Image 1 (cartoon, helix red, strand yellow):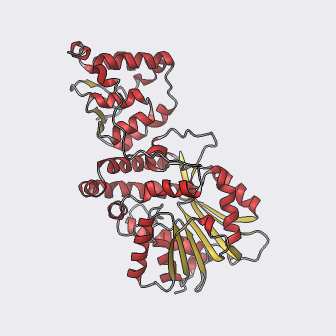
Image 2 (cartoon, rainbow, N blue to C red; image 1 turned 45 degrees about the horizontal axis):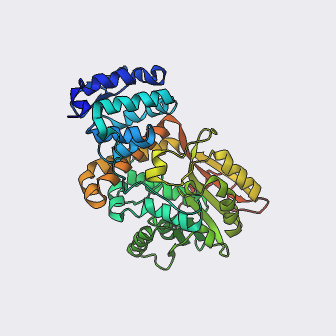
Image 3 (tube, rainbow, N blue to C red; image 1 turned 90 degrees about the vertical axis):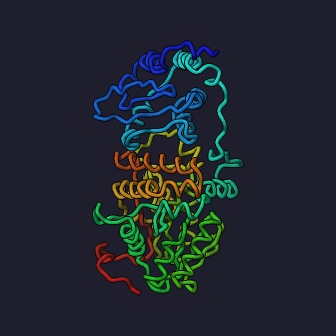
Amino acid sequence: MSTAAHDPKVACSAREVIDEIAGGALRRRPVAVRFWDGSVLPATGELADPPTLVLRSKRALAYLLRAPGEIGLGRAWVAGELDLEGDLERVMRWRESLRTTSLSLADRARVLLAGWRVAGLEALRRPPDLQTEAQPHGRVHSLSRDQAVVRHHYDVSNAFYRLLLGPSMVYSCAYFDSPEDTLEVAQEHKLDLICRKLALRPGDRLLDIGCGWGGLIVHAAAEYGADALGVTLSEQQAEGAQERIRDAGVEDHCEVRVADYRELDDEQFDAIASVGMYEHVGRNQLGIYVRAIKRMLRAGGTFLNHGITRLSTAPTSRRTFIQRFVFPDGELHPLSDLLTEMHDAGLEVRDVESLREHYALTLRHWVQNLTDARDAAIREAGSEIERIWRLYMTGSASAFAAGEISVFQTVAVHRGEQHRLPYNRIRLFESSRPV
């Protein structure tokens, strides 16, 4: 019989440790915790009807002891050993205080000993590895590694993404006239907003870097008469985009390639859009990215970058759930980094707009889509993928709502060149579509 069999209820033993470590920072808890033996550590915050974290087995503890903090919690969640009863977004609001909570070596030793006492050797055994945890190889941001990490995220299943994103199949922040707009209407607004900010004209050659499933290039061809090229590193996205192009009847005006933007240096475009892609670029590659765009942009042309930024200049950790399970090698930069690189490359920034609140709304729509289609999503992509996407999208919605991160559309032109943008930007939105 294990030592754990002689212990009192697990919650009692856990309380003795949790209330004392990290200088008592965990005494104030907005969530209850229920352990595998049914015992409950109550919440100590002021929330009515607090959510309950559920440790379904001793293996959940093993994940946490092996990697205390966000990685261990994430692994336990993805494995289904850690679950939640209640509002997940409410719990995610607590995560910022946890990030500033650190354990000393003495704290870690005490936690390890307590884990052995309540769970025996099972708490110390290495839990199973998870197939969905990224293990990228090669030089960071090399062409081959970038392709591998992009496919880790996007080559899940087109059918899964259709359940998640809805009929629009647009995987970036929508643009709402009001919170009552449907997601599909808001995504249509966003595609139109981009085309108008680019001042697209019939016959313009448009490049969409990271074109996803082709939503923007199809919209630009059908509604603005553009000849559009979309590039993506995902084979599955390219297949979905080709199908969308055929369905829309714009085969003569749209092309999709599986290619990296760094492989297009000798081509020229009247307009370039990069939507939800530059987060994959990396800070040390940001100058290369901007200079490549400038080389491809014809004189008088317009560039729009739509990307997520962090609102703090403090360095960020790479040991995060999102790095391991969602966007390996992804980086969020302060907006000032992008603006500086644009300036140094000879681009003039003409317009910057924050869409922060729009992304919180968009993510909540996606989470609801996933909730509504959970069983189908699990059948299509597996329970680990469904749990990863549910956690990361809920956490992201909370981060956008709290102002921890944001998303900006930045419009730029060649510095010193005549451009097509009107003196009064309102004119971009007053005119009807040219097609």
